[in-house]
Image (tube, rainbow, N blue to C red):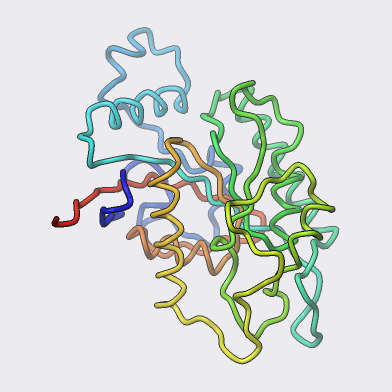
Length: 277
């Protein structure tokens, strides 16, 4: 996909329980349901798994590979694992900047790490090829605890990239004002930064907060950037409840509220419309 194109995003349903209207977000447990992967057959099963020995995730991987192989040059499918940062410090009666994780939040991230480890070992889940995280401390820490120490393929190491646009709703709330780049680098030295990442927070304002329209435009810009420049099929986002809600709106997914520390995978179809010369 190229930068002269307009990209339309849709959610491909039928693969994850979170897509289904019958799934109740209030009682859904991603760790008890294989990230929500639906137990079903795929078009590729007959050729790929004739003896029916592969796991659901292995067969899913082959199905997504086939979707991209059969798609034209203007269509691309990606699976994005959207992780909701774990519980933060602070409450509504005090002012705090760039809130950090609580002990409960740390435990939630450790639980996610253990679940990923189990899925990799027993289910052979396709692990992310690229990792992106919000620049806010609670997401940086959540990603670090969630993915560090996993048995990842040598060609897919955990090297997260900090993306400015992946942050929470911007403005007024000081917990959503990020720390400077030097702080992030000092505390998370293994992380990389996207080109042009500013030293100071240039987006947060004390008197203006984004509405849904502005937030959705920002998330659409983020997706355009990633679908244009990143050829990976499996991608991890560590972000916030508001930004996940916005991303789901942008890709036409049903509303699905996540508890803190949870993960929602989404199969996204991107269709590129070439700009007229």
